[in-house]
Amino acid sequence: MSEKEYCPFCDSTELQLVTIAETFTNRAGEKIKIKNFEYTLCNDCDEEFVTAKQARHNEKEAGIA
Ligand SMILES: [Zn+2]
Image (cartoon, rainbow, N blue to C red; front, top):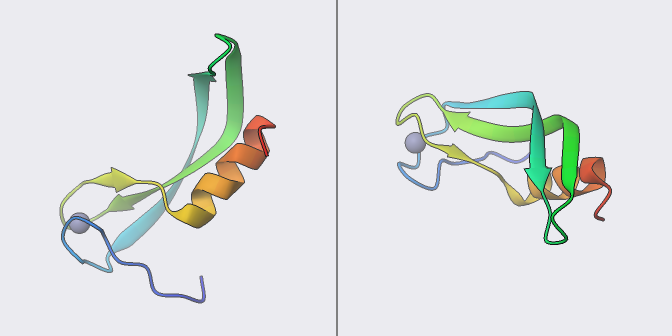
């Protein structure tokens, strides 16, 4: 990661990248399985969020992009 990321909730930089398998339902009601869904977990406030970069990655994994 070249750019420093900050937690949008507490401005911490103690962030952890998490990759999990996730299943979503899209607008058409179809189940979409994402093998490598990425999100960020803040080690300070325990909030989870998806960065713009991760959102693009997740869309690609889901075959939406
Ligand atoms: Zn935080």
